[in-house]
Structure formats: structure tokens, C-alpha cells
Length: 136
Image (cartoon, rainbow, N blue to C red; front, side):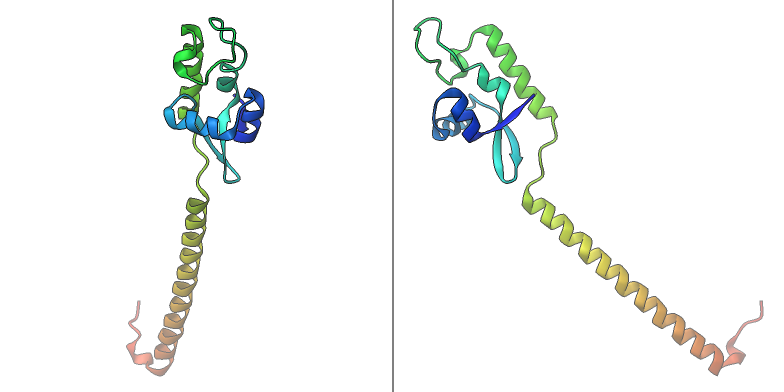
């Protein structure tokens, strides 16, 4: 399965990106996640809409209903493949994860420093008050 950006898809079908976005909103094309904050579409699914309409001889409409039963079966298969493919996480999600990781590292470092301070205090008490030591 090959994924293409909207501008490439528009070139393949000889249409505008706006027409493709409208087709996606109607459910006639399946969005396939993003890459670099740009949405992509399934090239194989797009190719089903290329060529000529056998009934009218004109350019095929980007409409699920304009496809033959065999083409609709292929369209469905491509859409299901995208659903099974894990989506690219959004940039906000990645940033949030990195921030949480950094906060966790900072907290771990703070706790390690706190443990060292407690260990120093314990050692000071042992030296100052040796009678507090319990024999093993």
C-alpha cells in the first residue's frame, strides 16, 4: 500500500486538493494518517477513480457509488488495511510524551539527591550518637 499527499493525489486524478478533501469528508476516500503534519491518502484507492466512466465516457467521479462492485470490494480492502495500520501519532502527543519523560527524569534525580542527603544525615547521627547503634 502506497500513501501519497493531497497535492500528489490531485495531480494523479487531475483535480484540486479541495475536491479531494471534500471526497474525504463524504467518506469517498480514506484518510491514511499524517507525515510531517501533512495528511495522506491511499494511492491504490485513488487509482480506482482514475480513468474514464464506462457509462458516460467522461472522467470518473470521486464517489464510492461510481465504482463497480469489484472496484468497491478493492476500495473496502484498502480502507480496512489503513484501519489495521497504526496511525502516526500527532505531534502534540509526541511532545506530551517527551515532556512527561523529562519530568519523570527530573523527579528521579530529585529523589536520588534526597536519598543522598538522608544517608549523610544518618551517618552524622551514627558518628554523633554511637550508643544508638543496635548490635546485630
